[in-house]
Length: 403
Image 1 (cartoon, helix red, strand yellow):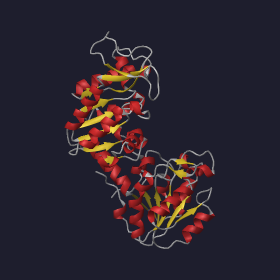
Image 2 (cartoon, helix red, strand yellow; image 1 turned 60 degrees about the horizontal axis):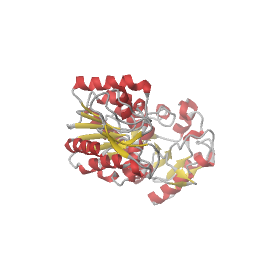
Image 3 (cartoon, rainbow, N blue to C red; image 1 turned 90 degrees about the vertical axis):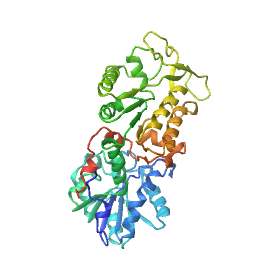
Image 4 (cartoon, rainbow, N blue to C red; image 1 turned 135 degrees about the vertical axis):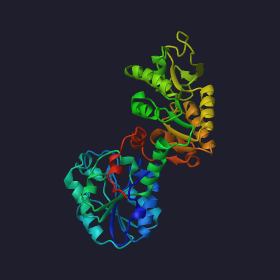
């Protein structure tokens, strides 16, 4: 499946190993509010430490316009030191590979860890320009990419650097992501069910298109469902709508029919005329034929209704492989998180299936609701897992050496 060199194939004792991690964590007043990405990086880091590598870590954080305290990786160095039980030396250079970094690396003993400053403090990073790639490579004998969340971007620290380091491999997190997502999509145990939600059809066009070639059933929820309903001739009131994608929605329904894919839209919808928690809301059935009333002009759909929750849960219960990307409603508001929670619970309850949450909002929802450890895999990549589900090759994966 993944025919790439991994950390298990490397001889690292005494070598300087540059590891690209995904430490793009949410910060509030310098405090990390969700450390999932740091925890996910630990297996690769610990493996390299235990084998006597000199471990040099790098990552981006946010989208800084120029170097600033707000986007510094200093809080990550502190938290990593606590997690690893040893000091992580932070090289605070605005140029990333500056005097501090060079000195820190020169002083390393086997098993030591250094963290470089935010790679996006260098303008070249996102343009994948050679000067910065060479700077990063100058520190290392071996390069390991463990940043699945950034692997859909061809940047200096994910792709460019690999041209100037002799040996390039993927880390454990990368390996796990590719094995789960790759096997699910290309080699699924059937029935294979995909659940797609979120606000926009446009975000999921390529995903739906690719998955229609592979799945047995697709369940559609979230704001994107209303574009399908409007295209089918139903009134959707003030609900989210992408008028320019209605044609596409009809094409997908047609393609599903041709491929024999079970394409299920919601059968009832929770609606309200006032957006917010604690406001009056009620449930309406989705029409079965044109001309029947659905959502009135002053109301909008905000979640899937109870009948849909039961329908979707029964489909998930029959599945042997489930991939889910995108919430079923406005899950940030508790009143409209019920559908998303029901789907998360259905995945957690199906112990016989491989259940995969494709990053982003669905990953946040599942972790928040306490089901994160009850599914097979929660992806750490938002955009990256979507592109993987679209069947695209990820530049950060391709750049690693083949076995």
